Amino acid sequence: MKDPFSLSTEVKHEMTNQIQTYFLHEHDEEVGQLKATLILDFFLKELAPAVYNQGIVDAHQFLEDKLEDLFSIQK
Image (cartoon, rainbow, N blue to C red; front, top):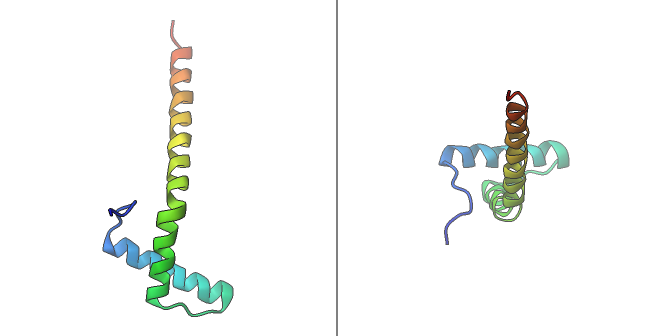
């Protein structure tokens, strides 16, 4: 099965590092690379699609508003 989002190895590595840093600073808990990767995979699979879709809706609304502005200056 294909991953829902394709991220480069470098981006995934940076994200797992950020997860590890978050857990250390916010929960005083050291999280290993494997656990951070599993957390990232969960977020990408379960939560990212909703965030992505909302971004699409927001972009659509923004463009629609700008097109309406453009048509309003028609003579």
